[in-house]
Image (cartoon, rainbow, N blue to C red; front, top):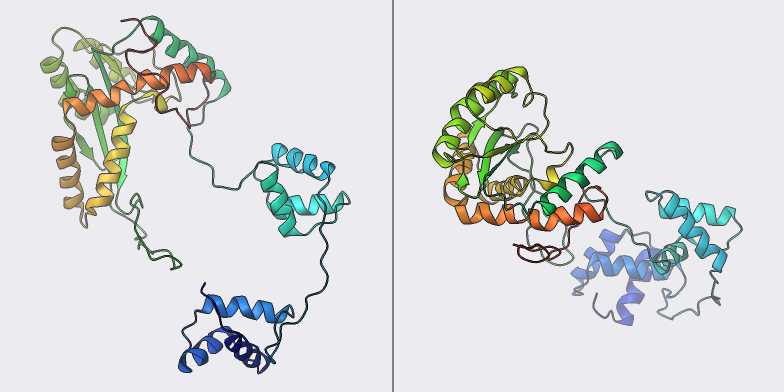
Length: 355
């Protein structure tokens, strides 16, 4: 907000006294040649309402203000309230402080919350890990570290849903302007994908629309996709990783894997997508779809196929798989809890592991 001349402030006060709205005052001032924003008009109207300016253009001496003291008891109560319920709002905290006898406004409460070392933000998404599965995650990651696993023969697999208008792209906008609105249809285009990666490159990408049942998984995924990938890329042996989805563990799927020599690596812990490197592939794929912005289902399918064929190189697959060297020891240190924030360089290949 730029500097506003005292004469303009006086005009604002006069127009306010006449009963004009903020929008009307802004329009009148602009017709008079004053380049002033609605934000500035609103600011000086608040000053007028508080008695800092008048229609005579004279600054009225504000009433004497005194510092309000935040006691140690208030600060400790704020910490106790937030730690007991991290979703508590500043208004709820202020109400509790007043009920405890504190003499402070809502704005001072917000300042005290900040001084206590807390800030307000939306929580990040994190995979729910139930208490019973945390020791299993720790044991699994510790096993990888102890065995010095290089993941050379592991096929990492998973499925995901991809749709348009996922708001995965950032946009520039002018400062102080309203956020850009990206229209989203009620029913955006959506497909499902299944794929696998290994140190020897990616499998084919299966794109489908219906819900994946055990029959589809066995015939369209295991038979038509994975089996040829295993025979071509891993004639010397492999380990096939998949999560613990019921259709992956169905009798039909197990029998097919046993009959066709697919070696299911059946030690993967439940609730552990944060350990699977292919999750990073899906994230990159969704960002790519947002940048391309396909308009039809055919364009969406072509975008996914182009991404898989051109961007999923052997080098890219190895980069994603190397991420396990970071997350495995962090999972051990965090006692199996979800890895919402993983240090960038916590555990690198060749550091902390004897090779």
